[in-house]
Length: 302
Image (cartoon, rainbow, N blue to C red; front, side, top):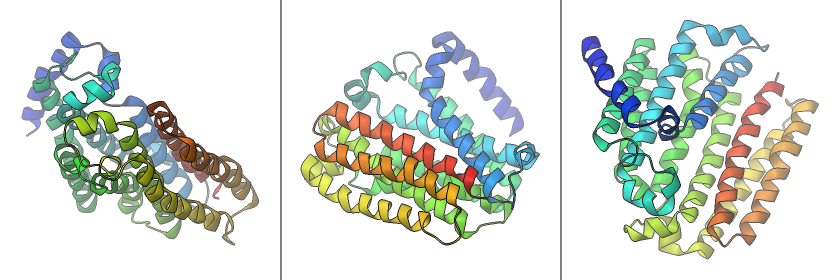
């Protein structure tokens, strides 16, 4: 198996260097999103799994391997998603098209298989539960890219679950699954779910061209907003529940109020007024920012 992986690297890595600049390959695997994954898992390890912040724990070999395995699985997921969405992305995001333009489809698929295999094997090397989580993520990402993303809400739920599992897998590996880790996983699930629906609203033109059955296509933009409002209400209620929980400290409460709750209200106001693609692009980026500020609040938990 190891020799096979070495062979795959020798075949596909030079291909990437010949056919596309490093910048385009990093765009294909969504490098900024991978950095966010690394940050999320590092903060869980440092802030949530011990009584005091311990930065040295991020250099533990097991955690480094865990993070690399998650990054490999996520990168493979981005590649397979773009592989299946070449025609749709040519309409929705022509300026970000990489597969078929800078990188040919076959080498891209080779990278998908290589990164997926590495991520799963590293997961099983760490522990059976981590290996099963990584394997499930690979299969779910493939199913999402090939079929689920074209189905109403199912694809959105799938990605939201993957966002939550990215945090939970750290606690599962450390065998320290607790209420606070689960709370952050719920936060990640809700904001990811909301953002995925917003992205469907952003991409409605291209998705409709290829007979996708996303919520905005089936129900229309106005009715999709009506679905989003109660989900956002639950999200806001969850944030308030966290802020006013007796165990939280003053600094954490102020941080969550100013940098998560207030921007979430702004998100809701902007959603009410949104009616164009650029409006939904703004909301998608704002959702990513909310994810970041919410995750950074881990620094103030202890």
